[in-house]
Image (tube, rainbow, N blue to C red; front, side):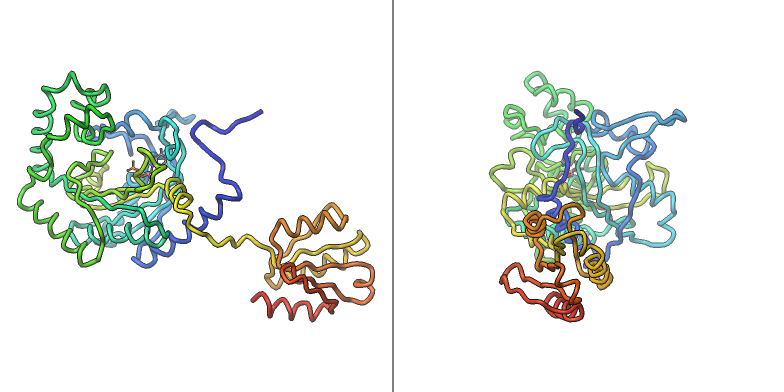
Length: 420
Ligand code: AMP
């Protein structure tokens, strides 16, 4: 037997309707805020992600890297932003717009330890506003993200925000953090020990109980902010108030990737079955990625949501989703003698954009009926010898069970009236 790859899963009938629901919401919200879609490749040259300044676990330990037959180093995208920026630079988009507002959604790949809400192939929806730095842009991006959650119908969700400050503030803060943590080095968890030199900000994120105790009194980014960064954060918050976004300031919030500065935020599910995988999405401003990848110095802000986790949250909150998986009519033919007549009717109805199906194989009435009901068919169109001879059909409403014998023209009239 063949199996699915570890950390991946199939989306089957019951779940696909939730995916369609989410995809509709993505289209709606991005249109409302005037974001256009971008589709970048799933694989990129490895140096799009593997850069010297990027020392996160995600990039160093979790990417799927391989060589193609031309001996080129390729990586399956672990996130969406770097590919979008690569495209922005390669297509010189900066020459045509001062603020590029784009969104993407699609699969991402990370070699992580699979568990509920954490997979090796998962999907993200993300937005990027690339061009200039302005707290109003930050506030609008956070507003969009929180609006998206509302639009989906999720209630138990918290938006947390923080600031890491500009490069100088961040550097001062990092020095203070490392200075504070170094005496505790031997007490820190193994992961945090390793991060102390490589990615110290991430220690603030540690789920280890003892680490958390140590972090309790650690210095906070907010105490090392330059005057400009303080003002930037305050302005962002003021705009969030105007936009009517509810948020919580979390001084310990940092993000997984190294490229963030200034405003960072996360959207968390407050649901009991979510455990530690409760981050539905997150993002922040990044100021050095565009020039690091070879473009002009450009400030940008973005976020991404994990669609797989949103699906879990939708299920957990039992949000009702209209199932539009139905047929307008199912055509039942008693024997192969009625096949030609029946197929003509099916063609005609489909030409008129009705959703119609029939059974290819069996003419046993009960089996055809079962298939019709399993497919949520609104009507049955039943065809036997009499119907063919009289150029008629029997039309039955599956809900009211009302049944009548009518001509082909009447059939189309009734369906037009009842279904449209
Ligand atoms: P990140 O790019 O790490 O900030 O992730 C953004 C969002 O993507 C997270 O909040 C999750 O909802 C989702 N996500 C990240 N990694 C995974 C994963 N391995 N499996 C499922 N969802 C993920």
